[in-house]
Length: 292
Image (tube, rainbow, N blue to C red; front, top):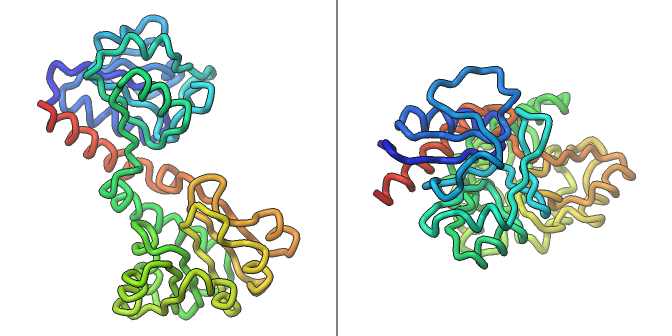
């Protein structure tokens, strides 16, 4: 239980609502900033603002899953204004206060390092990324069905990257009867791809491996789906890029050539915000209770 814990929740989307409910179930005291237009009544929470909240009383701070921008402004779906996380506000936090965010950036990382604060980027954790790959793949299936006129069964699918998300993508599309190729750099990964009954290829050969591709799924946050790759794709193919912004696709050239390419950030929050929130809430409560 988190009885006695005081937690500030600053901004967020539908995933944050689920986290809030779970933390309430664990008996934490919550202070919500950027929720003044929230219509849902959640018992046991205190709606406040950045001026009234007392940072020195907080045991943890939850930033939006999408993180903050380079000026410290926080995204929130439940207010018409964006709260700002300032250096002066962070100065008031206790050194033991834990700051949770989905992703971080240079602004947030620098401030926390300078002030010796505990910053926990949840999406950097293997467990969160693997759990999150489940709603991510369901979202990809939804888009693949929506934007194609053929079945996934029997289609030619190319997956770039065999990491925490790529493995789940490859396995799921294979289970639906697709013919799946997977590109990776590491020999160990190429061996595992072969063992799973998938067709492996090295990333240096990606442009030669997409000539018959129907659905290209990229997980690599680097410019791997470049002009040469897109030139070799059939015009009827579709690119779904789940890498973090700006993705790994040359979207300008894809538009010019007439190949549909979609950057798909935050799929879990779109297709399954409750499940995505439950995943994050479980990890956050585990971290907080482990500190007790």
